[in-house]
Image 1 (tube, rainbow, N blue to C red):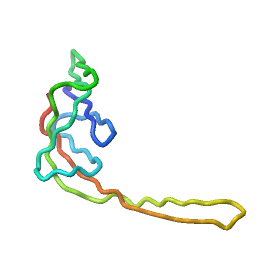
Image 2: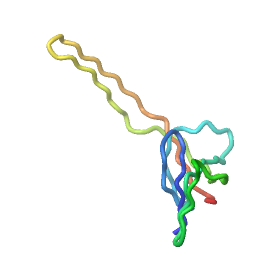
Image 3: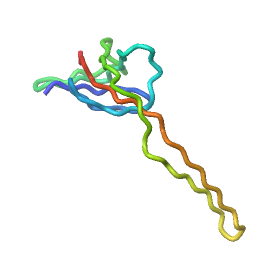
Image 4: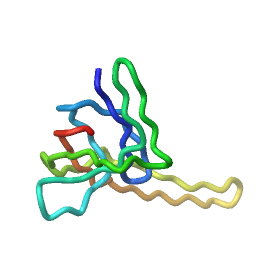
Length: 100
């Protein structure tokens, strides 16, 4: 198993080559995306960055999509205050093509 821990959008993901992950929307004009690598893992060793490794992981954008609708409600008891908002997050599906 050759895997890496990448960082994007304030979140970390454990990925392998040819994995498809859904991340927050990436504003990229091209189809290729580079990710910061925090650590790489193989059968016999672990390489940790301080805080990042010099190499970058590569990914390919497959599609841009919308997530499920999220409903946010505010409520204050005894004062008849209720407010409901909702939104659908913008997401990107990415296929990991290369891990250092």
